[in-house]
Length: 458
Image 1: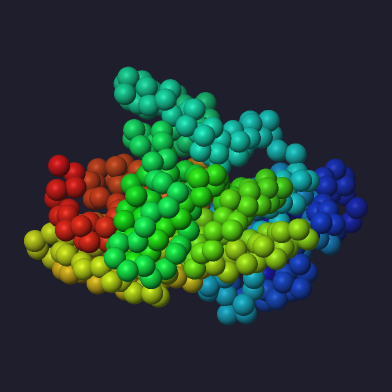
Image 2: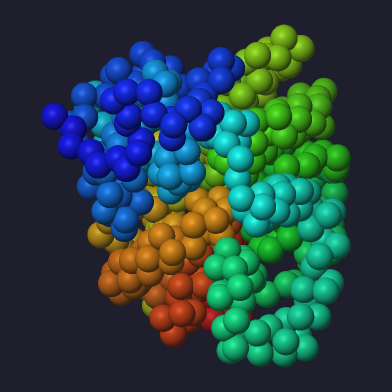
């Protein structure tokens, strides 16, 4: 029997609290059949990051499913207290991997979040923060407008002063978290130098498209450059539609349904008539959402078939290269053996079920010794913009993740997601560690070019 504690959430008779809040509307509410598949066994509890940090039943997958059922049946009001339990979910999907009953919690939380956004009135500060995030982060050109003043903020010493005073956290923990995540702004962030078509080196084996992402192309542009070099070195002609924008992953994970669908349609259009063998992505959160385009646009008769076709071609770059095989010669990354640890991004491991392929590729680099961390499947706390919206939980998860990675004794961390890269880099800095964090494509690129790691930072 599921033991829960709900304050003013499960009225046994008509109750003013229940009547003063809305319920889910009729447009794609959480599926009752999927809800009923949950037998409340509790296997999900130990793998749920929010439950492990918060320790409350309602902040676990089975607790949230109980709430979804109650709201569906008009037994539980969609109150701020209930919404907070939905908001505390990172969407890491570890529970989907763990569940012995095959409960599709991913589908349930994806249906719940748009309902919350449509039917729940958020506070003004929360509403303004979310508007700032969703009107800038998915749009690289808009985000670039903020980079110059932010670059000046970093270089002038103002950032150091603001952080030392600590007033921003008292003013708004969410704004403080956003500021804390700001990486060093590179000159490359202000341009997209990659051409529309890059020919394969040697004999062409495949013709692939590459998604540049929105946040990654600004805050870690070296990853896209490395990805192109690795693909071309392994016989791929790379096509980069210049009009491409955001894939919609960030908005999709936060229930911004209409905006996500608009971004998805625009991206599909930008890749139209390109005749590609595969559409390549090098960020796991983006890849998971791209593979769901068929579901995201299932209600759109004009894009339904295009979306399904598009999604069928999407491959994570590590998934693709492991499948087609590397043909370029690989050289050691340093003179002595290199001990590294690969960090599993949640939407790669749980969303796309990709875990073996990245390790297969890294092990092909001569001299690489791969270590495995404890709690490898536990989320780092980034989860898109979760580390901004829910900074306290994200802070604890980031601390745990970095400690587990460091305990392996690895001298380098490989991470294939921009959010994880930012989160882990920050928590390494907080713990006074200087362990580099690099995308697997950067490591393969250095190996192909014969560049030693000790020369990278010099």
